[in-house]
Image (cartoon, rainbow, N blue to C red):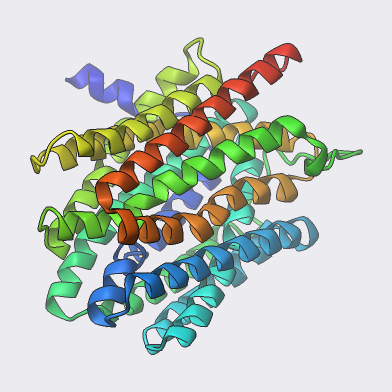
Length: 403
């Protein structure tokens, strides 16, 4: 047991202190994002919107994310990652607090669009900062550390969020979201100011290649878009499935979602370290991660036993643990060909576009065909993503550029 513990600690060695600060700041921020997994429940239960109205509001969530990500990439290349991160986090905190006072369909569509527009300018800037403060050989583990912070915060957030809902109601979630964003801003200004934090891998490309001319990247983009659509069902249709079909309470849903973050916190870094040292290539690992995520939906249709929810969550968790770090590392490798902000904003945008379609399509499919048929459709979509990644692997192998 002692050897196992020290081996676990060794997987964190070699990462820069700036990456550790980024991880801590991300943990503070994500601990407060407890509104997100409960948003569909808040809109249906507290505000009594229909599923069709909720699907359009969630599409505005995704559309704001798309626009914000695109703007974030542009601003990062123009004014730098630090200024973008500070302004995004502070503004997001204020907007989250204000969002609770909107209760009309039009008001919520506009409000959620603006919140996500401002919030997601942060994401390309954060990935660029993480790349700048990481040694080339540590980039995948740096991504993993920040994801650990995200998931540790996310494991605490939903559990606390479920408790807040049952005690003081949904308004407490918005206040917590806003306050934690502001706290994360103060930490960022203290520890990652460029005047005191020195870059490790500040990549400057003399003749950058446009991301729009990088054909393998766009096959990768399409596969990640599909993965995003499937994965996001766990934050819109799945909480409703847990409640309506299996009768879970908000607190139980929060604990189940929190278990996902706990497993990632405990297992992801050793798993990624082991996979990094293996002979497997990034594209093959992304493919396996997507396959496991697809499998998580398949098992739900096998039985009505409530324990299958945990089995499905475990398959999704392992799939996520593999697919996200290596897809992020793949995007950072490709970004060395051009402008980092442009490349990484497009990578993030694949998931932002998934927000536009994933929530809307999932909720509408459930409304029209029920949960079981919706899961089968997601399975079919997932296999298209698997085929795209197999094609990407073939493309890169033919160019002797397999990553």
